[in-house]
Length: 400
Image 1: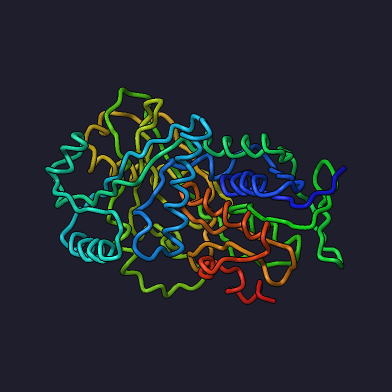
Image 2: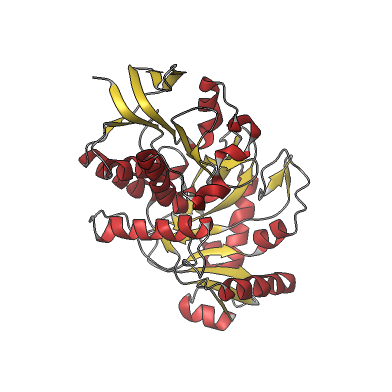
C-alpha cells in the first residue's frame, strides 16, 4: 500500500523532527522520503552549534525556535537516550574593535531588559573559562545557554525515533513529479515508486525552490554555499563554541539595498563584505570552523582563499591554531529565504501543502522546533500565531 496520510520530503533535521513529532501525535500513516541519506545535506555538514538566549519575558518566534530546539536536543540525549554528543557548553563571541564593543553593549542591554540570558565578560574573565583565547581583545559576549551536538548523530536520532514510532523512511529515492489532485490530495512519482497522500510537507532545505517547481510554485529559497575546515584530532583544549562580532556588526550596518540578495552574506557578487566565524572542538578531538556565506547556485567547490581567511580569523581568537594544519575541508548549501526569515506553515495557494525551510545558517540549531511546529500544523490544521513572521503567505507568489 502506497497511500499515506502525510508524506514528508526531506531527511534533514527539520524533516526528521517533523516525522518524529507527527508520529507521536496520532496514529496516521507517515512516509519520509530522502533523495540521498538521512542528514546528507546541510543538516550533516554544519558545525553542530545550538544557539539560545532563553525564553525571555515575552518569547518571540526566534526564542521558540532556538530555546525550544535546545530543549528538544536535551530530551533526545537525556530522556530518549540517544548519544548525540549533546553538551550545553556555552558560547563566547569575540569583541575585536571599539565600534563592535559599543554596538554589542547596546544590544546586550536591550536583550537583558527582556529577560535574555547573556553577559559581557572582560577578556580576563573569558580566559578563565577558555585559557586558549588571545589576550588581545576588548572583551567577549558569553551565552551560557548555548550548546553543541553532533549534526549527523542528531539528525539520524530523530529519524530513528520516528521509525520506531511507525514512520516509513525511504532513502536514496528522488521525487520526480508531484500532482495536486482535484480533491487537494497529492500523487508523487519518485525514482522508485508512486505514492498518494492527503498532506504533503516540503522539508527540502536549499532544494525547496526546485521541488516547488514540480507544483508550479516559485518558493523564494536561495542556496547559499557555506564551507568549513577541520584540524586533525587533538587532545581537549576547547570547551565552549566560538564566534566573532565582526559580521554581526557589519550586517547591522547593511542598508539592505540589494533586494535580490538574501541578507547576512559574507560575499556579494564575488566580493567579500565581511568575515563570519563559528566553530568548536568536536568530541573526536577535531577543531572545526567555518563561516563564509556566498550565493553561487549549487556550486559546492571549496574556495581555499575563503578557508584561509576563516582560519586566520579563528587564529586571531585562538592563537594555538596557527600550529595546526588543516586536515580536511567541505562545503554545503544553506536555505536562505529572500528576506532572511524562516518559511514555516501552510502554503496558501495549495491546500494541504506545508513547508519548513528558510532556516538559513542556523538550521541545525532551529530545526527540531521548526519540525515540531510543522507537525502541529498538520496534526491540528491550525497555524499558531507565533508562526506569523514565518508565514509562507507573506510572499505574493505563494499567497494565492
